[in-house]
Image (cartoon, rainbow, N blue to C red):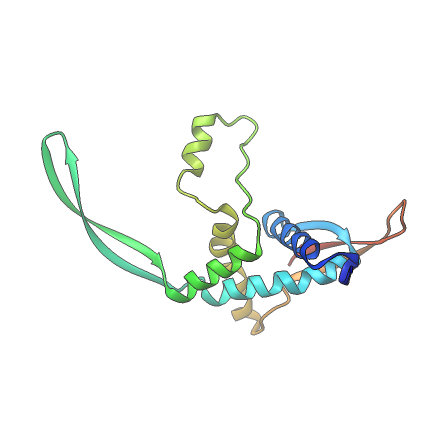
Length: 171
């Protein structure tokens, strides 16, 4: 039995995950007004979770033995890991989004692309915690508010089925 948005719950969740992933990756998408309104609350909760936990990190030092030829050398390396709150939020957010992959640039060689993307396991999640969350946390401090991370702009009726269309974008 179709429910909200004329879809079954599995289809509706798949649409929301797909559109939320695209919105966070590209910054704005065009969709129907009803989907944009549904998507707004879904994305706002994800961004709020990231904003509240993005700076929860644990820094520790680790002794590693490096082999150079026949000599072994002990080196102390500083490791930055996610704290428990950030790790829980990261896992919760990963369950609500699809993991988009970094796109190879037009003139970029395959080796340069691999070197650039080697360290990043989940590009969308990294973008959310490293770019989007700090930006909105700073905005929340300056304006002394929280939320309101998205904006819906109504475009008019779509040709063909006359569905009301809108652009949803990150503010």
